[in-house]
Image (cartoon, rainbow, N blue to C red):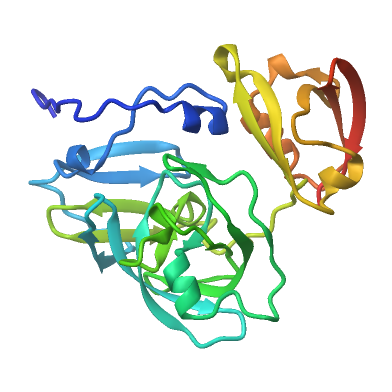
Length: 292
């Protein structure tokens, strides 16, 4: 919008997020900025569009949901959460497009409803980090999550065990992140108090993805030094002999300096043997891990 400007309201270090994403992060655009527009997120085309809020009119096939903004500036809306083997629960959740996962249920909600339950297989959460530091909990599945009339089957979910911070917020049940948002074309209309979700070709694809059970962090120039910060017990990485503190020097024969951490993560989401060359205590070793 010609002539529009907005002041910087807070100066904080974003290094913790940059280390987890493997790329420099110069700033965060928040709700105070976005309120001036209708924000369109087209994940398929990887385009963010800022529409003039005064003249915006939506005519697509999406569904408009009533949306409010919580005290932290997050859009909140109502969804239907159905745990495995449990009745459906109507819940107020927040949309957090900066969160990379699918669903996170806050610890008060988890405790209130006795989740995840005795018959659901879960694993320890590894490598979950935000502005407030690392989080703890169990990773599992929901039977479904219903949003905007669309039922998403078996999404992954973090059952938070945090006792403080954002994941211990009792005012909302939890949050949905980018792995949910990316299944829609999203319109955030703060002026009219509505969240519009428009399904597309990938909306109902499976949430299944392979994992090596390894969490990484990046540092050094351009965040190209990739280090193992956690390994899931009995996971593929642990069974291959990978240890916390190992530094990645090559993956499938490619020097680590020539790939990004996102490249590494995506490679380890494929069910195929992956050769990792690591530096440990001054020596080099090559291990093969097969994600599952």
